[in-house]
Image (cartoon, rainbow over all chains, first blue to last red; front, side):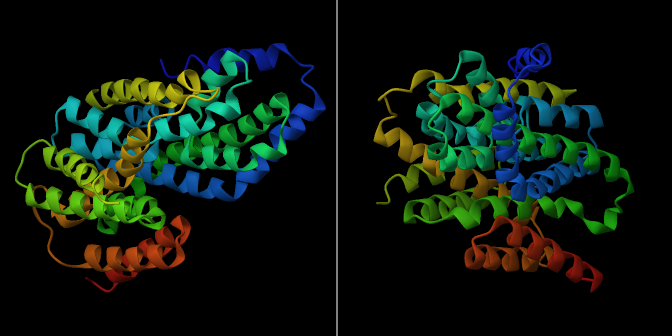
Length: 243
Length: 104
């Protein structure tokens, strides 16, 4: 269900060879603007793909995650949860809790996308990532014309997603040749440090993170990965009281 | 198979989250302040909980002190200093590889 919205658009591109040079040029500008971040997308995908193999899951199931969910942190969390024996509902809940932040971007992008045709909104929503949302919001004033703006947004969002798919595929291929002695599972905590710590600015965010760590560790003997969910909820609850 | 099913459900849910604001908001409607604040805290809290679980625990018991802890401390230091995801990953991965090759 995640993919159908992007399919009609792909077909439409093919059936409309007369897409103007300006549109392609705006698409290319979007692609160029996000290009410095593409290696990160590729490497994160690579790490996820390799982890799938190391955790002992089916490669195709792993690759499907990058198309169906298209959100690295939540995909790694899902794999990690199932690996430690958590039930399906906990694995999915963990993923959705991590991805709840997209509601913020979606709200922020609403005025930017408001003049776009409906099928564009559905397609761009599927391609939404932390990075593409930031790039689109940052450059929207350059494109007051919604037609040019949507091509810019598509160029940034789609190419960043393509780097993610390519990285995942490369990781799945490389996974089996990575020696166990490299302990590639270290990528899980490292990735989460890299995603979270640089953006910790407000005291309430710091408090939420620290409380989440403490509760997760105190409840370490709970089964099914419940300590992680309760740790996150505890961190959010306490963080709300910090001004 | 279980992983695939998890990805399908998480994928549908994540897509609906991504659509939520775009379809429901728009003009001058906005999320209430309390909702925005909660959403802002979800990222740090959820990522920190998973990080602690993966770094400090190993199958429910404490992970023995070693390369994992030292490389993570270095990565956190660089993350606070450079405020950059790329630098954090590079220093974390390089120091972890160096520590492993030293036999830690």
